[in-house]
Amino acid sequence: MSAAPSELHEVFLNPGEFHFGESNTRISTLLGSCVSITLWHPRKRIGGMCHYMLTERKRPPNAALDGRFGSEAFELFLQHVAAAGTRPGEYQAKLFGGANMLTGPTGKQMDIGPRNVALGRQLLAANHIALMVEHVGGSGRRKLHFDVWSGDVWLAFPQGADAEIRNAHG
Image 1 (cartoon, one colour):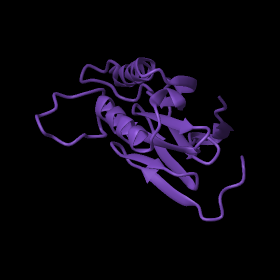
Image 2 (tube, helix red, strand yellow):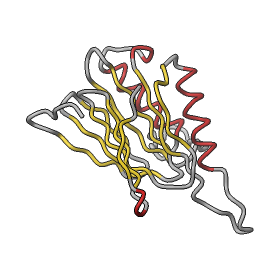
Image 3 (cartoon, one colour):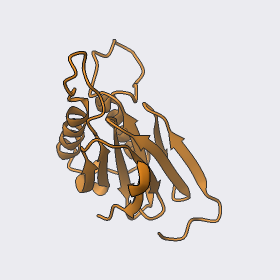
Image 4 (cartoon, one colour):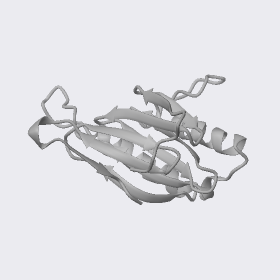
């Protein structure tokens, strides 16, 4: 782990939240079937993270963007990328989450996690953003820590005695 800045700004994202920050920022979240995408600009050392719950909705006219939906969370990214005077293709992406955590009324697994992951991949490809690494699927929780100063994402798996922490390099 590279050294943290002396004035560290820590942000925790709940489901549906989004943050785009400077090089003194660490963004964290906890995922199950939800998905987080991190975007990092290696030259400017800026970036952000979203935490979306569902792929999309029928957005009412003039409604504000809602980070609970992947399509709208990604629009928030694009707004911040443009406001920073950068282009999407200059960023590196990492994709996390999408576990099979939910069962329907018949006891059958719902496919919310896999659909969230598929949308994340589609949005990144459509915007020519390099997907450097992903850790998706499975059935457990993931805790993420994204260090904007370095682009590193640290994963913690908080389940039981097999809990572990590792860096998602890319």
